[in-house]
Length: 219
Image (cartoon, rainbow, N blue to C red; front, side, top):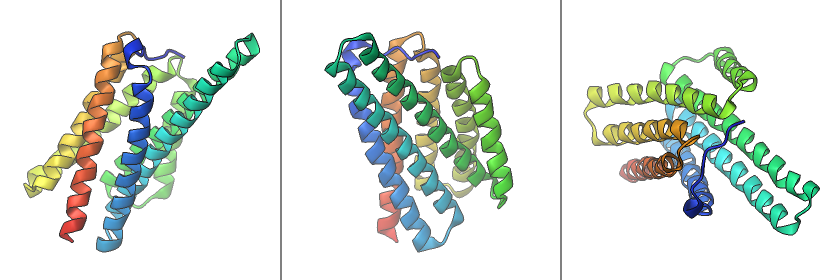
């Protein structure tokens, strides 16, 4: 599996950002479910579930990365060095699976259909393709970008139909997420793209969270 190149000066900051993303996306998920309770909208419920999955992805990755760093600091032998490596790999796999599940949930939400079998089939196909991919990280970034293109177009059409500021903010946020994931595709060979991708994600999650808080206050 190829790894994204993390610049030395950014090491540590990426872990902090991942914890910030965990908290931010957790709040987005909670607020979206609150909107669901207030409005009864199925889309808000699926939106909330998807962001709880994203939050879980960041939490698991951060937790395992912390455990890997701790194990590395505790020992210097070959066996000790294999532990952080294995934990890091486990964190990457868990992150990819949970994040893809979240994006599939978002795509399923936009279809406005109620078919659990179709959802599970779609998720199973993507997971299987990831498993058999020769370059799993690259495949993850590409398929995530494709799903985000679809979701972004959905929110663009939603804005053009309603012309509401809230809809525009959500579209811009997902556009930032899309551009961020595209940057991660190139981060496998260039560290600067990795940093830019994280910063774009930060802006996107902040916009979505602030938008949901505003919606709830109005209700």
